[in-house]
Image 1: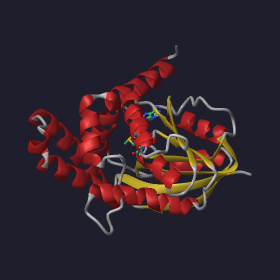
Image 2: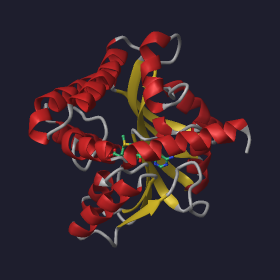
Image 3: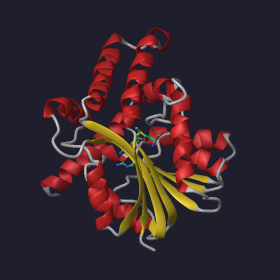
Length: 279
Ligand SMILES: C[S@@+](CC[C@H](N)C(=O)[O-])C[C@H]1O[C@@H](n2cnc3c(N)ncnc32)[C@H](O)[C@@H]1O
């Protein structure tokens, strides 16, 4: 295996071990937002779960009618978005996710919602998807591609599995285009064990090079800062109730502060990006 391939395999392993861990499972299922583990939209609420669900609703509205269409959710977590797209919008959604712990919870929640015929849960990595070419009408991803050691490979796969004319909607915590402050971003790179993050310009260039057209990019960086500070507040206020050890809370709290600082200083950005594959 080449050095690059080995580093990439190692990066995927780090992401799986993190999301499979008991700590991450407890933190994301109790504090972050239950069935949704992504940045919320806080214009009308301070509640993390409500805000996180608003992101799903907002993206679904951008996607337009999807009844009877087949979609894939890359890095689907607990599958909250897939169940909304299936139950409220009539789509069939395949959840692809690296974490088998999350996938088990996803399958249980999906069965409990009576949606197992409309939501599939597949163990796998988004840089080598176990699907035929042109299998899906739309691809969806929320705050997951930041973990990819090779973002280009993920976008190759998105381009491969989408049908001509298919839509790709996603959001990701990114670094700003142009000069950035390494001192502010380095703790975030360390947290995800990668040398950098994507950017709006990176996704634009990479997708256009793969024959996509940009439909809409909505920059919502203030929501990133708000989200991480709300999660931090929730972590601190619920520590006793959830019996979380001081060492865990201190580490998570410091980690969350880096994201808040990154957004406030203009080094990080967050956007919902919608692209269409050439028809
Ligand atoms: C912040 S969570 C977001 C989960 C979900 N999209 C949501 O919004 O609720 C990031 C997700 O990316 C997944 N992930 C990380 N690396 C991955 C990979 N190589 N392939 C597939 N999923 C991956 C993790 O397992 C985790 O579920």
